[in-house]
Length: 266
Picture (spheres, rainbow, N blue to C red):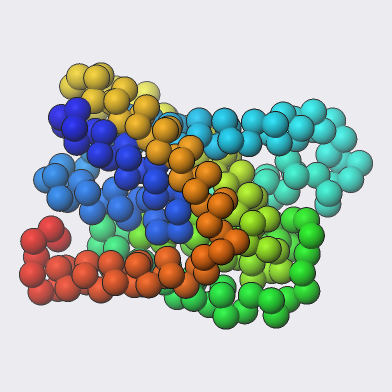
């Protein structure tokens, strides 16, 4: 992998992690475009840690506030954001342990997954406003968003889009849903990094090649992730999720055409 390729992959990961269009799906597409098939496991883990750094920087004050309130989380569990993040992470953990996603991560269902993202985003806009408006994330919203995050393990299904859609459908404003969805990325990325880190320890031979492309990719991923969060928080109030769904819908159709007719990348 060249430095330019690593920088582009880092840019794609950082931007699409927090826009409702699926970072994993876009990374698969760019890897196929470059003929990489699958980038190294170490590179993938560190790219995600780069976007994790972006979340921590943007929400540093809120994260510190949550940490300070950890001792009190069992006094008022339904109001404690740290405990709600744990609850929201459980469905994805169960899904990752129980379901075999190997074919999905190979891109087998990528086109259909992009179309599923479109359906989720469109439906969330349709039901938006039907549920009573909730000012803060509670247990029901955390559970719904957690289930949607479990669905988004599939490459091509947007994690941020699905969780925001789940929150909006459960009565949250798009801004409040986006804030909690981005915070949900912290345990999700950390958990994924731990699982992949175990694989690296068991198979250290996968760590090959120069470190320079990896460093460049991670730095670009962190910077792009920071910009994507700021951008999404600004436009989420003005732009309906449906418009992102139009993009993933077109992309899904193009991927399916290639998978079943043209075979340029798949």
